[in-house]
Amino acid sequence: MIRTATRSDLPAVVDLENLSFAEPWDLRTFRSYVHHPGFIVFDEDGSICGYVILVVIADDAHLASIAIHPKHRRRNIGSCLLDSCMLLAKTNSFPLVRLEVREKNKTAQDFYLANGFEAVAIIPDYYPDDNAIVMERRT
Ligand SMILES: CC(C)(COP(=O)(O)OP(=O)(O)OC[C@H]1O[C@@H](n2cnc3c(N)ncnc32)[C@H](O)[C@@H]1OP(=O)(O)O)[C@@H](O)C(=O)NCCC(=O)NCCS
Image 1 (cartoon, rainbow, N blue to C red):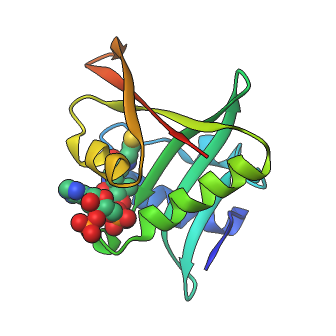
Image 2 (cartoon, rainbow, N blue to C red):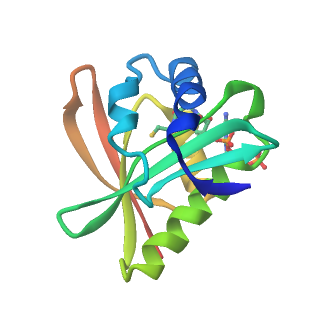
């Protein structure tokens, strides 16, 4: 089931975040997004397999983060969460969804390309240790 995140999902979200990123977001950061309509989780019989966060930045729908628990990857769950984001953005009249991804994160780039995003720009030194690729997809 895909649904908006609640406070009780946060421990599981933080767990999968820690397994997914070298510099994970902390509980406090996720807490600030609870009840935000763009904080969406994939709940499989009470187990949180992944999350996505879509926010509005400077009038753009922006994919702030997405992660799937390692044991649930390549099951199309990330793509389903992305579809929910695209629908949410479209419903709210945003013409496109934009994101930044680390240049070194080829897995994520392949995932976004497979889901219809295209690379539109590169931002040098966006991260302390990497460039960012800016990717977009029309809603
Ligand atoms: C990127 C991520 C969210 C993908 O989630 P997922 O649920 O495994 O992705 P899906 O199963 O929906 O994959 C859809 C398609 O994306 C591409 N893809 C996904 N993972 C891939 C990989 N490891 N290598 C190559 N292509 C990949 C494939 O084309 C895949 O289709 P296929 O399985 O039929 O070949 C997941 O790997 C993850 O959580 N990574 C760590 C966190 C991260 O890097 N987040 C992005 C930050 S910008």
